[in-house]
Length: 287
Figure 1 (cartoon, rainbow, N blue to C red):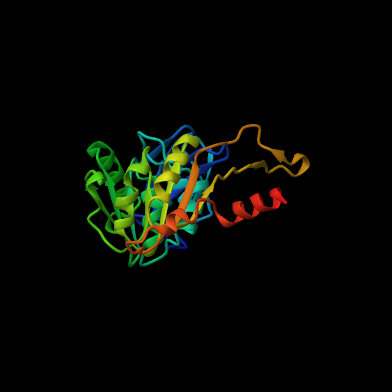
Figure 2: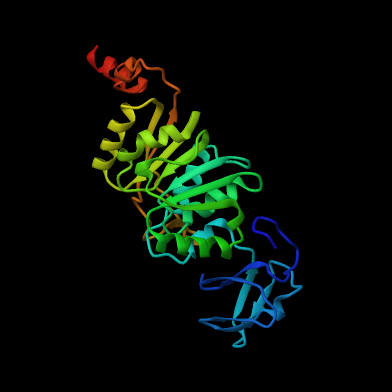
């Protein structure tokens, strides 16, 4: 079963999820004769073939598991990784803000372990494509394995290349920089995007955001936004609904912008030192 295509029953080659009552998750490719070893016993793949998704299955220790298809959130959280990933709460919003949809060409710099790459690839399929840049071959090798495992390799091209020299592509629909110094690559990003294209980046600290905003102001970008998402989960117990004791708090500041096909006159840059809402607020405070 290809990722994103639901089937009513488990088939050979499916990407499946076993969910334990304690919340433990096990994602695997169904293959006759194979077994998955869990913390609560062994489950034979062959015994799963033909079962309906949503069934309850048992390990050899008679521990129950729920047989499900993995969500994108499950896949990203369970990825093998050797670097920090873009969290699902940020990734979903990134896809929305960059207008990533089937048929898009999306560029990414900073492949890492492939978490964002996976989300982008799933969004652009079946007719779009993702091009992912990184300077570390070991990271891209891991990302390749992760993308192959979930069946998305056909929608991604990996390039071992320093983006300081620029991107190979032109007129891309969207571009995302997941690097610690995006301000050094704003001109390269602009050159790779189509007019009106979507730019995004994520950064952990405010001083990095400031440097990036300064770099964006020096290039033909408009509609610049800085945002942060905080997701608060709750304990789903009817008798005592309350927030979880621990949450994933600050993961990063998100910056988004749109490209202009600016002419040689750069007056537009000096005319927009502040966004309209900030200018209005200043005027109201002075009256």
